[in-house]
Length: 272
Image (cartoon, rainbow, N blue to C red; front, side):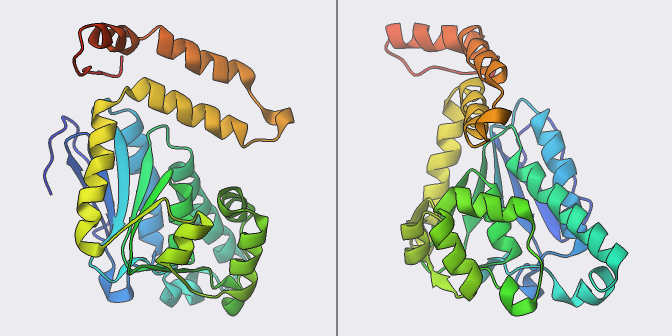
């Protein structure tokens, strides 16, 4: 787990591993005995790490993964359901905590990527669709089994799912709770790109390399504007969109990009 940025990252639990590699922050769910099912402490560990990454100019991308080769995330750790979800107040706390964690991923200013190998179930799908990009191995599988457990599903999770794959496909997966393979997930748009297991690391390297080279202000502005596009027109913040565009053109990176183009060389962007 190499660390090459000037900022040090520490997870609040051993079940979430964190390290940096060049300009990428890696957050890995580490509960392999339960196929990386998300326990309370794992949910709680994510928002502080992302808040730190947003302030770290060395970080260009955040990658989420699961320990081992069998699972990205297999859902919530149901061994905690009796304690955390049985009573009304416990349910309220659990839902608020999970919501905060998922929204911290969705709203992160830096690009986020889910690196999926094996099971991606329930809460794992929620983590994945909160990310900007989803890369998966061809041996991965996906399902949303809430209807088999009698769970209520929060608005934000279903909204993300509908925005990503459309309401028809979302109803199919949610109502039936059926499991789909990676090929169908890719066809539905649930996954961005697929790779054979042995080639997944190389595919990830393409993305981390691109984020290291591309202008971070432009990437972050694009992410912010696309988030506005997904809002109802009455909630659209056009002033924010215009400010994001203006920040790009007023940046040192824009000057560097123009200069590099004229000099026929690769630009060196610094996020300023």
